[in-house]
Amino acid sequence: MVTTAGRPTAKLISAALCVAEDLNITFINRNKRSVKTILEQFKEPVIVIGADRYEVYSSDSASPFFFHPNSSAFRLKRMEKGEIDPLIHAADLKKGDRFIDCTLGMASDAIIASHATGVEGEVTGIEKNNLVGYLVEKGLAEWKTENKSLEQAMRRIAVRNGDHLSFLQGLPDRSVDVVYFDPMFSEEIKSSSGIAPLRLHADYSTDSLGQAIEEAKRAARKRVVLKDHFRSLRFSEFGFTVLKRPSSKQHYGFIMLD
Image (tube, rainbow, N blue to C red):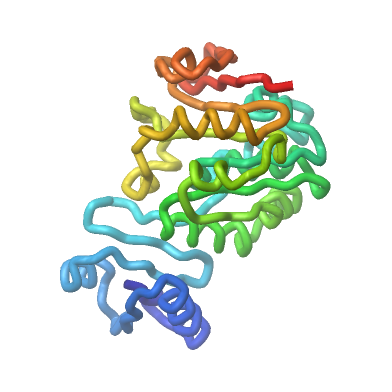
């Protein structure tokens, strides 16, 4: 369902009705009810349309899910100071490259890739969960920040809802530069609180990952990149060269194609 913030305006109601139509869900009037009351009454997740963001509340989660740039904000600042981001290093991304993020999520990595590839490049994010994809696409298009480089990088990302294997199968041979995978880790990293609300909506299935990697190797010109927990066996299973990061539980691996 979708409703408005506690004090709805005509603009918020109009936005909520648009979301209801886009997602084919029911709009309900707030009628001064708390979100907790609405969840208890209807027993369904509810999207709350506020002045600054859209939030998804569920009885299964203590915190709402909403789009925010997450780690990309400070990562981009580091890049502007001359530091090399580990994703950009693993992917060997250059201005003008075409980058496919097969597991978009909160789009933090896609934002960094968009900044690195610039206006000449092209970044596409694939998100299997329709609700997550919709909210992230809205956030990328509407989030306001004083950091114009961050804002411009967000605006350039194209979001596609669907299964990344099907998307990759539809790509011509060597038609993109880098294909990237960041599947949900088999071991949860407790410090990653920024994506905690996302876990409820995430797709944990990796049954087709091997097939998707093979399709990525066919479609990409330069590299296929995987981010995973440092203990993950998927690096060796699929033939990735691992870039170990002693200070991080997240490692990057790459398969060089050219």
